[in-house]
Image (cartoon, rainbow, N blue to C red; front, side, top):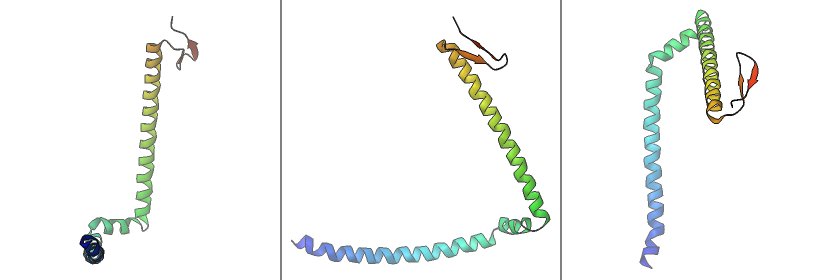
Length: 107
């Protein structure tokens, strides 16, 4: 019985101390993160890019990235098609040759 009586008080004290420690850590870490963010040179660059000519440069970067991603997607699709054809050859399934446009069956 004595263990049960002490549990409630210990639980409440632990929750209070844990809440207090968590609150102090949250305040300290948030202040530190805010100072780091404001002192970061990339933040100043982002502000410059958002005005006038910087937005044109950013739009060009986005376009280059989009074209690069489209190329990568095309390469992945080609690799998937190649593997699909190879697996069709191994399993003896009907395969479609994209270069000929005809259906061939392995014997």
